[in-house]
Amino acid sequence: MSAEAPASPAPAAPNHFIAQQIRADLAAGKHGGRVATRFPPEPNGYLHLGHGKSICLNFGMAQEFGGSCNLRFDDTNPVKEELEYVEAIKADVHWLGFEWKRLLHASDYFEVFYLCAEKLIRLGRAFVCDLTADEVREHRGTLTEPGRNSPYRERSVEENLDLFRRMRAGEFADGSRTLRAKIDMTSPNINLRDPAIYRIRKVPHQNTGDAWCIYPMYDYAHCISDAVEGITHSLCTLEFEDHRPLYDWFLDQLDLVSDTSLTQPLRDRGLEMPVSRPQQIEFARGNLDYTVMSKRKLIALVTEGIVAGWDDPRMPTLSGARRRGFPPAAIRLFWERMGISKQIATIEYSVLEGCVREVLDASAPRRFGVLDPIKLVITNLPAGHDEALSFPNHPKDESFGTRQVPFSPELWIEREDFMEMPVKGFHRLVPGGEVRLRGVGIVRCVDVVKDGDAVSELRCTLDLDSRPGGPAADRKVKGTIHWVSARHAVAAEVRLYDRLFAVADPDDDTGGKTYRDHLAADSKRIVSAWVEPSLGDAEPESRFQFERLGYFVADRHDHGGGRVVYNRAVTLRDSYAKAAK
Ligand code: ATP
Ligand code: MG
Image 1 (cartoon, helix red, strand yellow):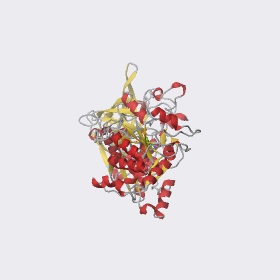
Image 2: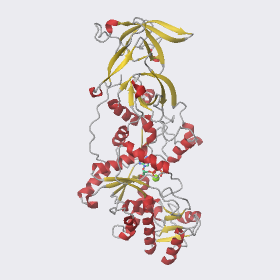
Image 3: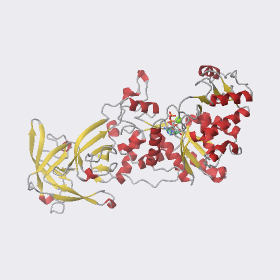
């Protein structure tokens, strides 16, 4: 039976540096006492567990401080974005347990970005540049060398406005011109060396169709999006730390709070939002061992058919975790425990699995299932004996109630609960030995029937006095095993998943290896199991503990309509820790 897990302590109010900063801002009356955050995924793939950290943080801070959090699709790059991803991301955020205040798209602000660009041009802070991508790179300089000014840097405001408008009108070829900010080509921060603001891309966009052929760059679009949505705290991962001066530079130049003409297009469309001067705060990405989380690699796993899809239960995506049977509460608990800091660290996957066990131990009803069956026949009961035994659905929580489990003299037990030639310390069934059948009583194995070398049936006698309520009900034997009644059991397909990668760091590419070389050989096994009848009727996505075996979930897609399909979420214990000892 499962070990007693310690009760989870009530979550304390978060006290990481971002929570402290927000508390201090509120105390100082900054942002008018408001807290507004956003989760800004780019719809170019499914969300993974790392995104879960950002979701929990952004929505969590809004909840903690009575603020709000938007879901904003950062869809300014039309090339890699798809509607399928948009829908999947919405479903995943909801599944994790969060509700956004507003659902928005950076592409909702294309007109605002455009007006802002014209303003920068008029301020003499942006120019149209005709350098090719290679030439731009050449002019950029390095970490140790300053860059050089573009020869187009001194174009007049009139010429820049004219060229930029013609860029928008589609007069120029893809990549032939860019709009660049005019900042400082000698800045030690390369992000400030006249970064591109707009590029020409004659590609239809999943939200705006072919309305635009120029698209804004991330750094430019992101800060403006935050401001027009009234975001107060723009939480992002550490790699944007060096971009913060640019974030602030754009907002300082544009002054969206006072210059309401810039946001007029939104009001014209009935998108009324409080404009703010947001602040960017960076935190460390969450990384997990035994997995890859770069979208490029996840896409390759799917398109190369290495996994069955984005929601393959071995994928580190949120939809994979969902299909695997991980409860959303376990993912929230995990990120809450890991905390928020600026320290980059890789967390052991087993810590996540530990959270899954902890949440499921408290929340999953218990059931019986036999994954590798061998027949056990009780010879001293009439063959037609048919009985319903009552079992508690949870050993530690009476509110789960009880259920009836059918019992008859022909049972399935786990093959590994019998050993013909027992090793030392084996306390389950052996020839001539005794074991307790959970809830039934003590049986003795009196005969081992074989088919060639293989054991095909165990013939046993039941000590009737040892049955519950009987005079010897308390008699002790060392082992207790589970069973299902052969006559009543339901056939199930059980998918035993393990980690997709065999090594802790699949991104390790020394020796010319790629993550493909690190795939585990046996991360998915399918077995034909016998399970108690109630598991046949369970709703898809119901999670159970199969006693002594692990936690399982009725498959979201394949279970039901006559099929009984369960996925193993986690084993009861951490087999990796055991192996390491
Ligand atoms: P890419 O830019 O390669 O598409 P990404 O992981 O940055 O990948 P986004 O869709 O831009 O994907 O991410 C949305 C948000 O989630 C961003 O704010 C990003 O910083 C955050 N995020 C992404 N990965 C992690 C992670 N591992 N831990 C914490 N936050 C993350
Ligand atoms: Mg990104």
